[in-house]
Picture (cartoon, helix red, strand yellow):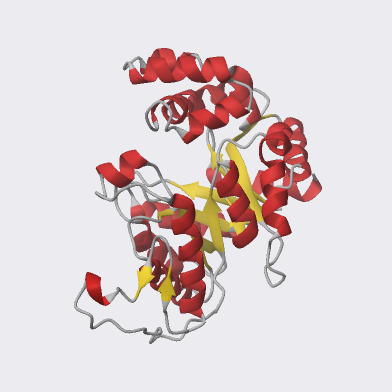
Length: 345
């Protein structure tokens, strides 16, 4: 099991890069660099490439609406060249609040867009001339939509690899099915090992049945907040505000993917209450409604023995990359500890 960490995107690029370099020495395998509506992720990815030697550098995630398919492919090539082949292209649809509110793009056809982006990226990396016609993208642009001067082009640069790993952040049944069919890796959030098969098993099986023979087995990257000690259980409470934000505030009623996931896990009543309170501006009350069981099952917080048992549960559920958020201690030490526990789990 590989170990990955989500770097902070709240600021401090140089500090995050220094931390990534220290974590690399502690055995970290992948650093995920987020992009929301602050600074871009790619700048930090390039900086980390210069500060590290072995660490895989992943976008976690680049929204599919903010860049063209060919620019996404070019971006991955750039980071891959800078890092000597250590780039992972993490993609996701984000949500309508960010895509329409920040980027000014309509939030439409997320599955079709993702599928076409993956296809175009791989064509670019093989240095094929791009002549693509799909429901979401037509490249080159048809003459009736532009000057008529566009023509199929191939990438000038020679990529280091013709297959850069693509990980997709997906939650819904159809999106997870597509991920299992096409991507090298899957990025679920709020992953509960004990309930994963019931929630996602059918979608993963359907997608896997259509997976191309030249694709490696699907990597599953999941985890949560990490704290190791005999008196750290209270640290789980730190996750309440974030859980409430996602379940209650990330979208309107009927358009909140995280709320739907909580319902599929069996927390229908709590999810409804959290959303009602959060959308009414009662954020603290919404956070108080997040079930303690949900916080426990989506984190790795407890004694070394307890965390080792949780690691075994993640492995049993098919997780191949443990994604952690170290809290309540030295992150370097925590990564060293979980790396050792994972080796024995």
